[in-house]
Amino acid sequence: MLSDFTAHLVGQDLAGRTVTAYTDHVRLFATWFELTNGQPLDKTNITAVDAREYRQHLAQRGAAPATINTKLAALKAFAAWCGITLQVTGIEQQQLAPRWLKPQEQSALLREAERAINAATSEHGKALATRNQALIVFLLNTGLRVSELRAISDVSMGPRSGSMKVNGKGGKFRHVALNKEARAALQALGQCLDLQPTSVQRAIGELGRRAGVEVTPHILRHTFAHNLSGHVPLDRIAALLGHSDIQTTRRYTTPGQQDLQAAVETLE
Image 1 (cartoon, rainbow, N blue to C red):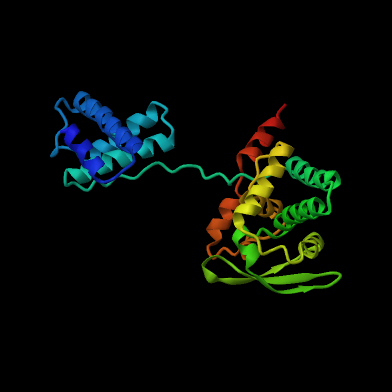
Image 2 (cartoon, helix red, strand yellow; image 1 turned 90 degrees about the vertical axis):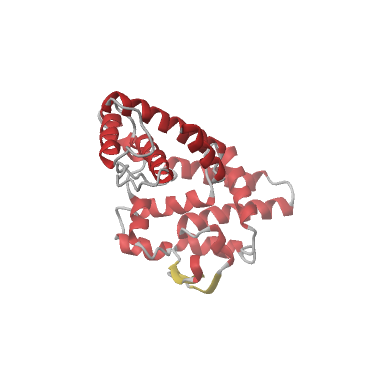
């Protein structure tokens, strides 16, 4: 029976690792099922009650929620192959914020960008390094997606305020306020915003490598949201990021692993 299920998974064009994992998960469940019920698992006797008891068994043994949910997904796939709809929910997993840069990491990245300008030996090299520094400052202070750099219009800048219109994800326009840092960075960028996303990612990634900081344009976006968290209402952060669902924004501003680490270190 199990070999037939495996063949079915292969026919679904699933990745090899998924086929192997699902087969192993069902095999372990079958062993537990026989020990618990005193009869072997077949295509007619799997029930939601068994799945829920197995979920509890895994939890009591200390299995991580992600592991339990993966095993349940395998059981659901097996039950569906048997012609049975298995009504069993997974275990809720704690949602941590995406990675963001700590203040010292932001400083290290900006310091490396400035060093690159100072170390440039040609006008072209200096212009490129200046552009890269401005990109980092601009993304840290606007939270734009890298694809949105080429979708800016209606820029308005004065000595004390500024704004721009961005054609964001899904073709939705939004107005983004520009602080002093963002205005200066935008002026430094000039006509350099018409960049390929891959070139922006490569430039920022290289500066991060030299600074010893793991960074991407999207991590800068997360950092922008995290820097605002605790100081600005969530609905305003959502508007700045272009999120139509505030729950998406909430994920950006929930405690991350760095926050949790810092919290426990206060006990020392």
